[in-house]
Length: 197
Image (cartoon, rainbow, N blue to C red; front, side):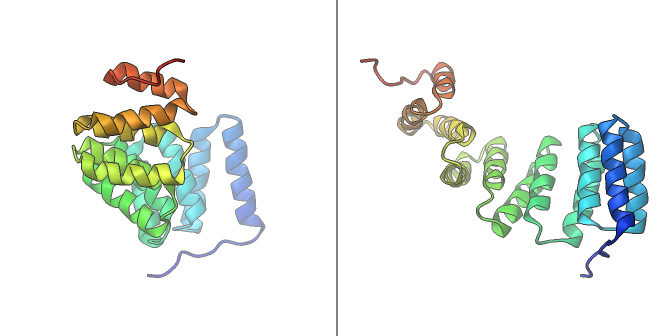
């Protein structure tokens, strides 16, 4: 597969600066038009496609954002972040099987990309595949041990599988560094925390 042309020089930098300036002044439509113009000159450019996808997503046009990201990963199939972003938007659209494939590809390309494992875990939970979700979420918590989000979802998945002892361990763990999340889990699940001394 041929790589997209590489922009260089002042014209590209000026275009990037112009897009950023338009965004600073709230001119989103004009910024999109500027990106369209730049993409006609430099089709398939990673920065331009990612930027346009981001603007489309912010505007709520997920279909256009997904289209740009599909082009991006088609041109750059080894771009783990592109696959993650595609998975994230597909999951928001309810395209769970495709989102799962995108998150798996992202995690395969960059095994230390904790967000890919977290996204995969969420998509698997939405597909009622908690056992697989637990594996993905465990990987996420290994990579991001101080982030409560993976731990929270991991506890919920264990509860869905009627494994309260495993969820209880997570509540106790969370009490050590995220007491608010631990308290939320206790309220939602009826699990107990540490006995006050």
